[in-house]
Image (tube, rainbow, N blue to C red; front, side, top):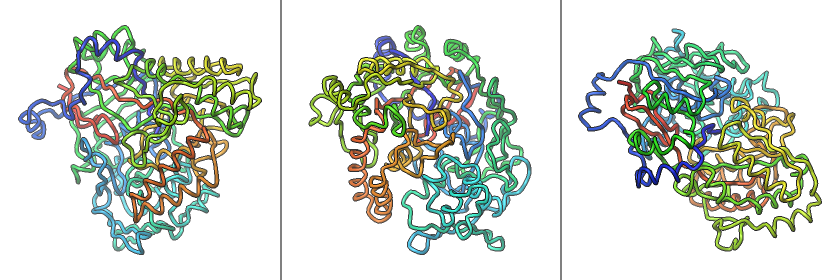
Length: 570
């Protein structure tokens, strides 16, 4: 998914010097102190109050089946539920899939092609309406009707999905999602077994909504959910306000635990400087955006116990549109990847402690990852070492694209603009006529997806939806993820290689019975897509959270990051 948060320029250079080795260790998984204090919290002593989150900008549409940013996926944790969910835990526990609206994990039949879910009784949406099997069926239909970004990538294997993808407005998923009201079950029929289906059913795009929800992007109008909290109001220019769901009764601590704060607000429109000041003064409890460079020494010393740093499976990358000039020329794309000094970008992001240079798609430590880096000097080492400008310029000569105009689209945040400015300089050095166009972070991700905007190259990020190689390769570079003229075309490069796409589909099939063999296949696919240079992969980041001293029980979930509703405010 799109992250939306960037780290501060030179953060390590300033903070590590000031705070010693504090950031060299992984942040504690809980910030609530001793077991005794945590036990007291469980007894309800910390329940109540208003938690204030601050951000420079909003994250776009509030529609959970369309929004594809971690900024709001973090908040959806306590708002919505799917048939399944990721466990609200830390460490590896946070990647476990548990039953949610379903009473238990599904009964599996037909060699994995049939999944039968028993629906919990007594669950109510935040509008007081009781959840039924009709809501479940309608919610799956809605995924296609609203052209969810992952409709083709995640849910195309449901029987009837092919017709829904072709004609979204009339989607019925006939024979694919079947309700039995008497038995209170919903059965999913798949065209073939899917090793990742539990993950796909646990992400926000598969949440269950009322059957009468509009079959279009609701924008700023909140949809009812079944979670512990509900959205009271949303103004992208001002504030998102979240309050307790009066109809919520906890049914699963793993899937949807009750929360501590009574109210959570996210205020928009602050500067990054104002965010830091608000958190430092306990006027806000968590800053979404990175601190400015001139505040980093202060944070690293005076407030070092309020900072949490966590490794991530993610990447910053620059997708290049393979369908329009100049990057419909493969050699021009490869030239860009050879020319980029990834060490310089790591410095812009914060240094070696908070980022690592890479030039392949699958991040280190991820299933299917095997070290590979052709776009560097001494590529036989399979690690990035330095740019190869001679190779890059030779490819540019062969491409015939010298002199072509190019516009780089970045977000208007400090780090994204700095990365965009750097890419502009590289493109100019290669012989392009490049300019930078920063646009609001509230719209940049949808803007760069839509082919109508004719974006040639952009700066963006990708953070895993779930821990599977396909979530990087198939979602970002698979044919099913490319939709012309749509704001929900997450294959931003427009890359569709039929041969590679077939190998992706085969790897997903193999994963059902032989995950280890599938990982080997994904490693080869990673190399193939990297060689095509549909995107210049830049670096892998780490994550920084800065919280107020009045915030307790900070926990980090590897799937959704800061567990907002499991923290308390004093």
